[in-house]
Image 1 (cartoon, rainbow, N blue to C red):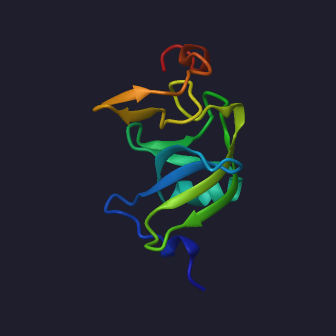
Image 2: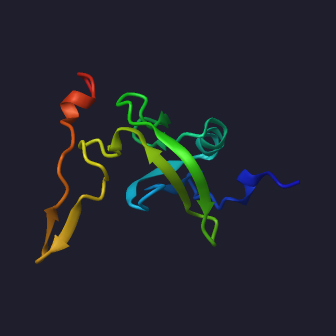
Length: 130
């Protein structure tokens, strides 16, 4: 039997983009990268675990902020090169800026306009030194 992880078309860095969506509203919360280990752990632990390219290590969403993403469903696209995670976003904040979604800017009149409020000050979410 073929390993389900072998069905993913990983990029040259061994990564696949993962889009997190709110399982109730369908709102896109964020996009991050996953490697084989983080995807396997996401399935095993039923919570979003990503690969942090900047830190070069696994990133359990919410490990510092408490804003865990509980997994409800995982989907793979037709080309097997994008993952969608349908999640319950604990605390209703996915973005490190303290907003519900990382996609809080809208292009209007030739510029990016911020349209979503900060729900919680990032300084109150993350500990000093972050």
